[in-house]
Length: 384
Ligand code: ACM
Image (cartoon, rainbow, N blue to C red; front, side, top):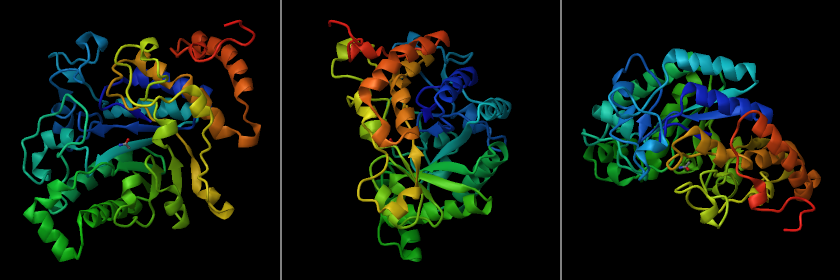
């Protein structure tokens, strides 16, 4: 998963990442196209999504303005993909056997959309696109039918562009106070017999799931879509748990737990060896990624087929350039690809490291930046 909202990556930059993915047999690209800090996909029916929602006043996140080149002609930070750009990237991915899973975040992480169309919020706005990270009150208003018309229109446009089976609708980190404090939402909950805001979230997601299913697609949502009851045909992306519960209920799951799959985390404890402001959290070392077993423990063997696979996530709050993104992704993605495509019994860290020293030359050959594994572990046979 690449977050292109917190920082924007051009279509050519995305294609570079697709090239490197194909080299590692990574066959799904989860494109996080919308979030609080930027809306990145042109929707013709709602032009303000990109006229307003794709731009913010600066690079933000405390970063050096020179750390990025994603500025518009008027000096604002941001960018977006036209529908032609999306079609080009889709063709590029298809030629490399990669299926793209687009993500349109709802009901939370929607400030950029609501800066453009505040009428779909509870407060009515106005909203300013934030220059920092976090969880914001810019969330959709489920008590307004027009909100669902808007989201239905957006998803329909997404389905017209993207041919893949899956669409990701987010669902994570919804600050429930906004709905608690909204008389309209409280009245809706009463009308629908919903006991709390978690059930309202579930009601919202179920309604969206019907739209997705009506188009013959399958909805994916982050762990939180389990709260208040899981929608019928939903697939869960486990970042903070829920895999076993979802699989037991007959749902498919993608494993991307923070402890092993969050490539926005530092790669070591020694931050002096990392680029300034490179990351946060963790550390998520290469060896830790390699030690990951995506199959949840305690899952009965007959349910293992519900675990579709694993993915690395690059959230980009602190990642303003392609070179920096590559540094965060590689070589951790090399380790995760091997985890995804091999049996646990076969995996061997020393063997992986020996091959990685050679593989680094391949990354160099295609011009992909990476963190030198030798920072973490000496060369084989070296006296260090
Ligand atoms: C997430 O990291 N909020 C899915």
